[in-house]
Image (tube, rainbow, N blue to C red):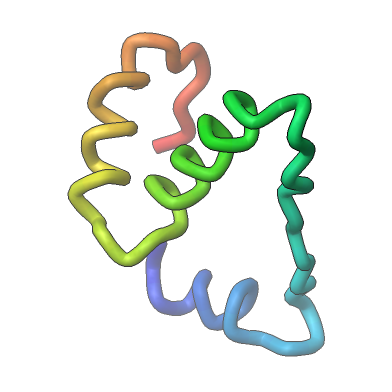
Length: 67
């Protein structure tokens, strides 16, 4: 994202929206919880190599790409 676009969107407090996302830990859905938690950590965590791996693994499913 170009710096000007980043400034206009993400960095401008009057235009951004912060949302809190919680993953309920339901004992009946432990497998689904772990799967979701792993995906969130991969995409939002501190290890960029996990994001890159996700992108590479899922690039074949992209239909529309705005470049």
